[in-house]
Image (cartoon, rainbow, N blue to C red):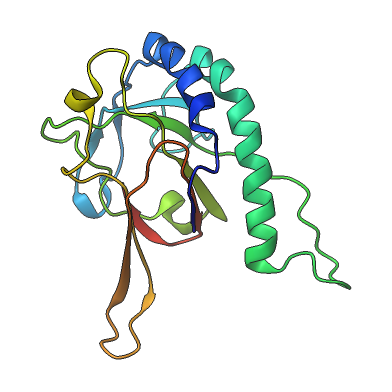
Length: 193
């Protein structure tokens, strides 16, 4: 599910100068996933799972800047998850009271080889209950919007979820996400950005 402008774009704009100031991509090595890319170096990690792969030191400056947004994402995720999984049905003994973020990161895509996409993958190898993706603004602070824009060059999110009833092939859904759009991804759903 993608909610258009679920986060106010002007609020995200207000965070961007600090994002530019503190963004420091970290090189991590992991199994490479379906794309077989073992070295990832276009994301900056704000929170990392203890003992998890990939692992690096979190960027505490960006975590401080983005903490209010992350709190909002938690609240929205819990609301979505409760609706998605009917966790709060009358008589139900299980109540969803909180969530824990395992990996929080910001990724910068560029036209350079290896930096254009986060290719098809499942978050947490299916060991997480779900994920949230927030589309950040196009960088209009370090260069012109036209220079940094992905419009007409891709961008957005693609999901593979469910199967076509006739062809039995996975259903592919593409969203042209823009600043403030928020995506809620259920566990074990293949997707790419």
